[in-house]
Length: 590
Image (tube, rainbow, N blue to C red; front, side, top):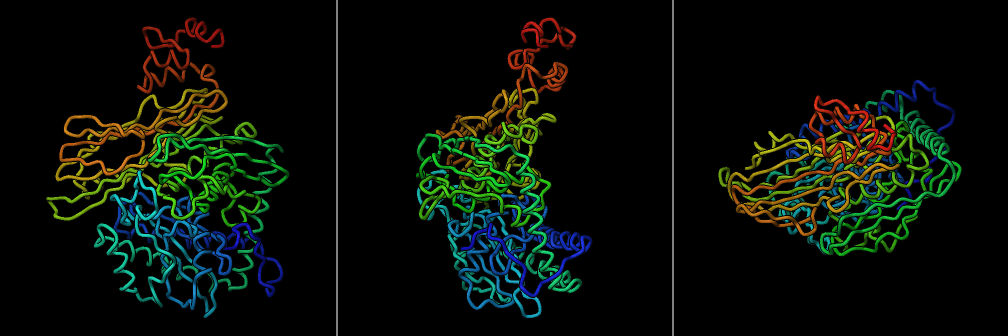
């Protein structure tokens, strides 16, 4: 498999330069092709996790190396790296490729994430010549395995997590292979509902073919290829220029995963970043060894997590394979961040990836505090509920993604109920979930007080409570930050932790691993209560403007007692800041 950082030169026949206007138009045209694929996928998909929560991505990849050329603005950042790795895996195994072929693959060890992220990869031919590859990823609500939804918190081998597919042609010259489809549908739950997602995923690639062909028709294949090579080179130069602004040195950070779901002890991510000139070198030696449970991370996800972390820091750099050329990653073999078969991996993309990014942020904050922030909630809050609805007489699998608080930063407080670090996925509207599934959301509210204290406080997570209305179901969850909240920086406090309580027959059950459990049986009337983490605080809480603390109290974010304990702020009977008492508590610093 070729390296995603390998420099790709334009074909020998491409000479000369391209004017800036044409280059910009083609750059936006490539992005638009991906955006239209994203929209087509969302609009046609059957599953709410794709159509509403937008857990998917589309992109264009190099015909020989599989390296990223363009990705849609609405695609999940964590798929930026992993999709080029999986495209490379398809290229390495593809034989006798013809127009209309579509490969399907979800094998996590072949450039993937977890099994639920299913990739379609399609060769794009222009006038009979292979020009590029189009690929997309969609999160299927179920791929078989031990529990509905695929998030098996106690899995000890990948076979327990679901059906694993190597690259195979699901479509051959535009015709769906009914035999391969039958194998897939025979091994997953709610199989009758998956055909809608399969056809939507394939249709999105067909849209991409049409739009990319139109772009090349307009400018010519030589010009477009020249532009692609130039855009890559410019992205590399821009990233190198941003990296050069970081002081040379060696920086260290760490982050912890609550547990692996099997053994109740934290997993450590040790991140060492060496900055020299225009490059960054990432070394995760010293991280915990491979774990028994599903919190191992495949190398594609580990690398992609570092890519997205740097893109968070320098968002203005355009996205393609050139963006990542200045990033050298030492492969962390012998740790849980380099999973090999048969290690279970269901938590890698949604949870471990965010801890890796958090470790990068923690390491670089002292070097560039004005560009960074305290840790965000850092969990996708994966919750799955599966059963049969007796009223409708059909099986279902409901998948919930939940938001949390962002960390405070130099310019202000963190956002509340923001999406996860790894993507733009959002919670499916509760009205949609109540229509699709036999549940009732009794509560959906701000998790007040969950933001870490700081001169710029963290944003707040959310609370939600789901009641099963009829039948019986099985609940599973793979979340994180239940043991330790998102870390504050520069003297800021940690954010609040993730909390899960299942009320069965009036009795409360808290998972032994706090944020991970599986196959919890619930009956009609039972409920699941979740509180998501808040973001970490930025800077010394005693330097927070007392007027902002008073505002937060007025909004119900903190009680007076909490404000006094966290910020040293005292209000008088009228609800105004008592300057003398506050100054005394703060040691004269108010």
